[in-house]
Length: 114
Length: 112
Image (cartoon, rainbow over all chains, first blue to last red; front, side, top):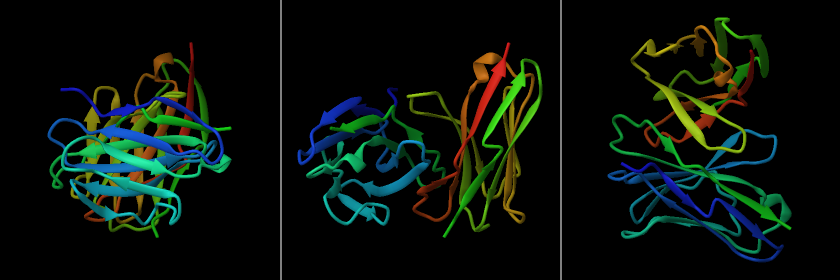
């Protein structure tokens, strides 16, 4: 059973470009979370999604950031018009049935904005 | 708003020592608590999950306890090894949506 997959592992963008980060949850998991780890800071929750639904996006910046988890395919975190302050490691986590809720994390995507 | 604090921020010990990492949280209405390990430049590895109704969990040389009423959890590592060197993160799931609130981590160095 493959773990949580994220790609790309490293992404370099120039200011103003778009960044698309992908996350494939563990097989059978339908709950996906995105977290961000800024340099020298702790991990912060961004958004919680289930298939085709955004459940909680309270941690996501209101502008330039969006997330989706379509019926088919991976979850996508999209950052438009990136700025240097977006440089961070972005982690995706998934879990199965809510009753248990152990979250399993992917290896992360490290975004560098030049 | 849930806040999670980990003490100490960094710890250096000789190989073989038993050690305790501390985690405290401000809102005791938690759903569960997870301890993770993060190696430099890597993702998070789940070590132990404690549900809110449990008081402790054990896995190998690791033992985690939970005291909800006082807002504390400890991670006990027995007979530490150099391979245990990493950052240890405590994270609290606070509601049905279970997004995690993370502490700042304890950076552990075990010297041979």
